[in-house]
Length: 242
Image 1: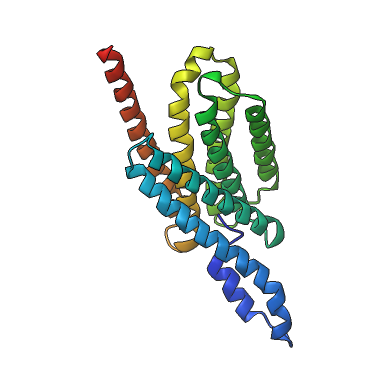
Image 2: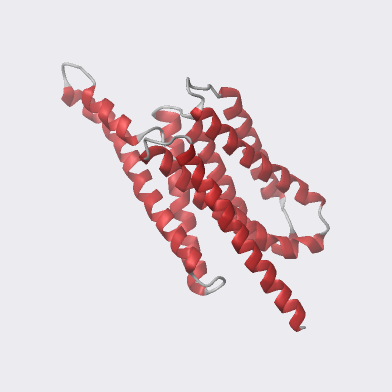
Protein backbone atom coordinates (compact mmCIF):
# COMPACT_ATOMS: atom_id res chain seq x y z
CA UNK A 1 0.00 0.00 0.00
CA UNK A 2 1.15 3.51 -0.70
CA UNK A 3 0.03 6.90 -1.85
CA UNK A 4 1.22 6.05 -5.36
CA UNK A 5 4.08 4.50 -7.24
CA UNK A 6 7.25 5.29 -5.32
CA UNK A 7 9.41 5.62 -8.44
CA UNK A 8 6.93 7.99 -10.07
CA UNK A 9 6.72 10.10 -6.92
CA UNK A 10 10.47 10.51 -6.57
CA UNK A 11 11.09 10.97 -10.32
CA UNK A 12 8.39 13.62 -10.58
CA UNK A 13 9.94 15.54 -7.72
CA UNK A 14 13.30 15.57 -9.49
CA UNK A 15 11.86 16.66 -12.85
CA UNK A 16 9.52 19.33 -11.46
CA UNK A 17 10.61 22.75 -12.85
CA UNK A 18 10.97 25.84 -10.74
CA UNK A 19 13.42 28.62 -9.99
CA UNK A 20 14.10 27.65 -6.39
CA UNK A 21 14.76 23.90 -5.94
CA UNK A 22 15.81 24.48 -2.34
CA UNK A 23 12.32 25.81 -1.59
CA UNK A 24 10.72 22.58 -2.79
CA UNK A 25 12.76 20.35 -0.49
CA UNK A 26 10.83 21.13 2.73
CA UNK A 27 7.60 20.28 0.90
CA UNK A 28 9.05 17.04 -0.45
CA UNK A 29 10.64 15.79 2.77
CA UNK A 30 7.41 14.81 4.59
CA UNK A 31 6.27 12.72 1.63
CA UNK A 32 9.64 11.00 1.27
CA UNK A 33 9.77 10.32 5.01
CA UNK A 34 6.28 8.85 4.86
CA UNK A 35 7.23 6.67 1.88
CA UNK A 36 10.43 5.52 3.60
CA UNK A 37 8.54 4.56 6.76
CA UNK A 38 5.92 2.79 4.67
CA UNK A 39 8.45 0.81 2.64
CA UNK A 40 10.56 -0.16 5.66
CA UNK A 41 7.56 -1.17 7.77
CA UNK A 42 5.98 -3.03 4.84
CA UNK A 43 9.16 -4.93 4.05
CA UNK A 44 9.61 -5.89 7.70
CA UNK A 45 5.95 -6.89 8.08
CA UNK A 46 5.99 -9.06 4.95
CA UNK A 47 9.27 -10.70 5.93
CA UNK A 48 8.09 -11.36 9.47
CA UNK A 49 4.71 -12.60 8.22
CA UNK A 50 6.35 -15.13 5.91
CA UNK A 51 8.58 -16.22 8.79
CA UNK A 52 5.50 -16.73 10.97
CA UNK A 53 4.01 -19.08 8.38
CA UNK A 54 6.85 -21.52 9.03
CA UNK A 55 6.76 -21.23 12.83
CA UNK A 56 4.97 -23.59 15.20
CA UNK A 57 1.61 -22.04 16.04
CA UNK A 58 0.40 -21.22 19.54
CA UNK A 59 3.87 -20.96 21.07
CA UNK A 60 5.13 -17.96 23.09
CA UNK A 61 7.47 -17.11 20.19
CA UNK A 62 4.56 -17.20 17.74
CA UNK A 63 2.52 -14.85 19.93
CA UNK A 64 5.46 -12.48 20.43
CA UNK A 65 6.29 -12.27 16.75
CA UNK A 66 2.59 -12.04 15.96
CA UNK A 67 2.36 -8.87 18.05
CA UNK A 68 5.38 -7.46 16.24
CA UNK A 69 3.72 -8.24 12.90
CA UNK A 70 0.55 -6.48 14.05
CA UNK A 71 2.40 -3.30 15.07
CA UNK A 72 4.38 -3.22 11.83
CA UNK A 73 1.21 -3.69 9.79
CA UNK A 74 -0.51 -0.91 11.72
CA UNK A 75 2.41 1.37 10.80
CA UNK A 76 2.07 0.30 7.16
CA UNK A 77 -1.64 1.16 7.19
CA UNK A 78 -1.06 4.47 9.00
CA UNK A 79 1.56 5.66 6.50
CA UNK A 80 -0.60 4.47 3.60
CA UNK A 81 -3.56 6.43 4.95
CA UNK A 82 -1.39 9.54 5.36
CA UNK A 83 -0.16 9.15 1.79
CA UNK A 84 -3.68 8.83 0.40
CA UNK A 85 -5.02 11.79 2.37
CA UNK A 86 -2.11 14.23 2.08
CA UNK A 87 -0.03 13.26 -0.95
CA UNK A 88 -2.41 11.95 -3.60
CA UNK A 89 -5.46 9.70 -3.52
CA UNK A 90 -5.20 6.37 -5.34
CA UNK A 91 -8.27 4.08 -5.14
CA UNK A 92 -6.26 0.87 -5.41
CA UNK A 93 -4.09 1.74 -2.41
CA UNK A 94 -7.00 3.20 -0.47
CA UNK A 95 -8.98 -0.02 -0.69
CA UNK A 96 -5.93 -2.14 0.15
CA UNK A 97 -5.32 0.05 3.19
CA UNK A 98 -8.87 -0.51 4.44
CA UNK A 99 -8.77 -4.21 3.58
CA UNK A 100 -5.45 -4.91 5.32
CA UNK A 101 -6.35 -2.86 8.39
CA UNK A 102 -9.77 -4.45 8.84
CA UNK A 103 -8.46 -7.98 8.32
CA UNK A 104 -5.63 -7.36 10.77
CA UNK A 105 -7.81 -5.93 13.53
CA UNK A 106 -10.64 -8.41 13.04
CA UNK A 107 -8.27 -11.37 12.88
CA UNK A 108 -6.49 -10.18 16.00
CA UNK A 109 -9.80 -9.70 17.81
CA UNK A 110 -10.73 -13.33 17.08
CA UNK A 111 -7.98 -14.43 19.47
CA UNK A 112 -9.56 -12.53 22.34
CA UNK A 113 -13.27 -13.09 21.67
CA UNK A 114 -13.02 -16.81 20.90
CA UNK A 115 -16.08 -18.58 22.35
CA UNK A 116 -17.78 -15.29 23.25
CA UNK A 117 -18.30 -14.27 19.63
CA UNK A 118 -18.40 -10.70 18.33
CA UNK A 119 -18.67 -7.78 20.73
CA UNK A 120 -19.70 -4.13 20.32
CA UNK A 121 -16.22 -3.08 19.20
CA UNK A 122 -16.33 -5.72 16.46
CA UNK A 123 -19.64 -4.36 15.22
CA UNK A 124 -18.20 -0.84 15.17
CA UNK A 125 -15.18 -2.01 13.13
CA UNK A 126 -17.45 -3.78 10.64
CA UNK A 127 -19.59 -0.67 10.22
CA UNK A 128 -16.48 1.49 9.72
CA UNK A 129 -15.07 -0.91 7.11
CA UNK A 130 -18.39 -0.94 5.26
CA UNK A 131 -18.57 2.86 5.24
CA UNK A 132 -14.97 3.17 4.01
CA UNK A 133 -15.58 0.62 1.26
CA UNK A 134 -18.68 2.47 0.06
CA UNK A 135 -16.79 5.78 -0.02
CA UNK A 136 -14.02 4.24 -2.11
CA UNK A 137 -16.58 2.73 -4.47
CA UNK A 138 -18.27 6.11 -4.92
CA UNK A 139 -14.92 7.75 -5.73
CA UNK A 140 -13.76 5.05 -8.08
CA UNK A 141 -12.65 6.28 -11.48
CA UNK A 142 -11.55 3.72 -14.07
CA UNK A 143 -8.38 4.55 -15.96
CA UNK A 144 -8.05 4.16 -19.71
CA UNK A 145 -6.92 0.52 -19.58
CA UNK A 146 -9.29 -0.50 -16.81
CA UNK A 147 -6.44 -2.23 -14.97
CA UNK A 148 -6.78 -0.21 -11.79
CA UNK A 149 -10.52 -0.84 -11.62
CA UNK A 150 -9.97 -4.61 -11.79
CA UNK A 151 -7.76 -4.58 -8.70
CA UNK A 152 -9.97 -2.10 -6.85
CA UNK A 153 -13.17 -4.02 -7.53
CA UNK A 154 -11.61 -7.38 -6.65
CA UNK A 155 -10.31 -5.92 -3.39
CA UNK A 156 -13.69 -4.37 -2.65
CA UNK A 157 -15.23 -7.77 -3.32
CA UNK A 158 -12.89 -9.32 -0.77
CA UNK A 159 -13.76 -6.63 1.76
CA UNK A 160 -17.49 -7.10 1.12
CA UNK A 161 -17.19 -10.86 1.64
CA UNK A 162 -15.54 -10.41 5.04
CA UNK A 163 -18.02 -7.71 6.08
CA UNK A 164 -20.98 -9.94 5.16
CA UNK A 165 -19.49 -12.86 7.10
CA UNK A 166 -18.68 -10.73 10.13
CA UNK A 167 -22.21 -9.32 10.09
CA UNK A 168 -23.66 -12.84 9.91
CA UNK A 169 -21.60 -13.94 12.93
CA UNK A 170 -24.07 -12.16 15.20
CA UNK A 171 -26.66 -14.76 14.20
CA UNK A 172 -24.45 -17.80 14.79
CA UNK A 173 -25.13 -20.14 17.74
CA UNK A 174 -22.60 -19.39 20.44
CA UNK A 175 -21.09 -22.88 20.26
CA UNK A 176 -19.95 -22.19 16.70
CA UNK A 177 -17.58 -19.42 17.74
CA UNK A 178 -15.41 -21.80 19.76
CA UNK A 179 -14.55 -23.61 16.52
CA UNK A 180 -14.69 -20.84 13.93
CA UNK A 181 -12.40 -18.32 15.61
CA UNK A 182 -9.28 -20.27 14.62
CA UNK A 183 -10.34 -20.33 10.96
CA UNK A 184 -11.14 -16.62 11.11
CA UNK A 185 -7.73 -15.88 12.60
CA UNK A 186 -5.99 -17.89 9.89
CA UNK A 187 -7.95 -16.32 7.05
CA UNK A 188 -7.80 -12.70 8.15
CA UNK A 189 -4.15 -12.57 9.17
CA UNK A 190 -2.95 -14.43 6.09
CA UNK A 191 -5.19 -12.30 3.89
CA UNK A 192 -3.69 -9.13 5.35
CA UNK A 193 -0.18 -10.45 4.69
CA UNK A 194 -0.88 -11.32 1.06
CA UNK A 195 -2.76 -8.07 0.50
CA UNK A 196 0.45 -6.28 1.45
CA UNK A 197 2.30 -8.46 -1.04
CA UNK A 198 -0.28 -7.47 -3.66
CA UNK A 199 0.28 -3.79 -2.91
CA UNK A 200 4.05 -4.24 -3.10
CA UNK A 201 3.69 -5.96 -6.48
CA UNK A 202 1.59 -3.05 -7.69
CA UNK A 203 4.39 -0.63 -6.84
CA UNK A 204 7.45 -2.61 -7.82
CA UNK A 205 6.41 -4.58 -10.91
CA UNK A 206 5.84 -2.47 -14.01
CA UNK A 207 4.93 -5.33 -16.36
CA UNK A 208 2.05 -7.76 -16.34
CA UNK A 209 -0.38 -5.48 -14.52
CA UNK A 210 -2.95 -6.09 -13.16
CA UNK A 211 -2.22 -9.82 -13.04
CA UNK A 212 1.07 -9.46 -11.17
CA UNK A 213 -0.90 -7.57 -8.53
CA UNK A 214 -3.68 -10.16 -8.39
CA UNK A 215 -1.32 -13.16 -8.27
CA UNK A 216 -0.38 -12.68 -4.57
CA UNK A 217 -4.08 -12.76 -3.69
CA UNK A 218 -4.47 -16.11 -5.44
CA UNK A 219 -1.35 -17.42 -3.70
CA UNK A 220 -2.79 -16.23 -0.40
CA UNK A 221 -6.06 -18.11 -0.99
CA UNK A 222 -4.12 -21.30 -1.68
CA UNK A 223 -2.09 -20.79 1.48
CA UNK A 224 -5.25 -20.17 3.52
CA UNK A 225 -6.83 -23.34 2.13
CA UNK A 226 -3.76 -25.35 3.15
CA UNK A 227 -3.76 -24.00 6.70
CA UNK A 228 -7.52 -24.51 7.00
CA UNK A 229 -7.10 -28.12 5.92
CA UNK A 230 -4.32 -28.64 8.45
CA UNK A 231 -6.42 -27.08 11.21
CA UNK A 232 -9.39 -29.29 10.33
CA UNK A 233 -7.27 -32.45 10.36
CA UNK A 234 -5.75 -31.51 13.71
CA UNK A 235 -9.20 -30.98 15.21
CA UNK A 236 -10.43 -34.27 13.74
CA UNK A 237 -7.41 -36.09 15.19
CA UNK A 238 -8.02 -34.60 18.64
CA UNK A 239 -11.69 -35.53 18.48
CA UNK A 240 -10.81 -39.11 17.48
CA UNK A 241 -8.37 -39.45 20.37
CA UNK A 242 -11.06 -38.69 22.96
